[in-house]
Amino acid sequence: MKNEHIVYQSKLKQAGLSVLGIFMVFMSLMVFLGGMIETNWLMLIIGLIALVFFGFCEFYIVKQLFHGKKLVVLTEKGFYDYSSATATKDRLIPWSEIAQIEDKSIMNQSFVSVTLKDPDKFLSSLSGLQKKSIAANVKLGFGQINVNLQSAKQCDNQQLIAMMEEFMSKNVPVALPVLPE
Image (cartoon, rainbow, N blue to C red; front, top):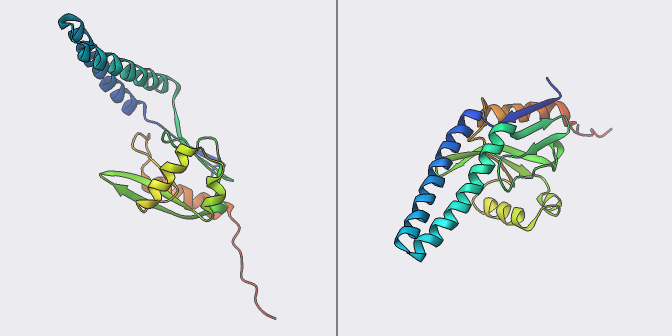
């Protein structure tokens, strides 16, 4: 087993998202120009807001397309989640802190859901937005960490779960029961 395994974002899926982003920027531009031609302030404002929003999104998508993005990094000590905006990023989730790993889904989107042994200890180091996101996930029956592999390159939920369980089994010492003498 390697000391580290990285799941990257698929460049093909990212390119498809970029094409959709270009379409949205174009449509926003059309709404904005339509507002200018007809002197319609509402269309101007909506077009401008949409143009700025989708333009920023497209810039971010293209940047990720050329730089390549890590979604999940598995190491001997634990894992890092970079899969979403509310992911834990550079905070290591140690294997010894994990209670359960399972495949969960909601509304046709599936996640690798990780339940922690002591969530309060982990939550104390997160931002307010991350804490609220985690609380909402827990209310829906998910674990505290939810890895989204929708845009992953050659890795699905079952494969990631198997790799995570393998890393855990090799790197978390098993406490043997003490037998009475």
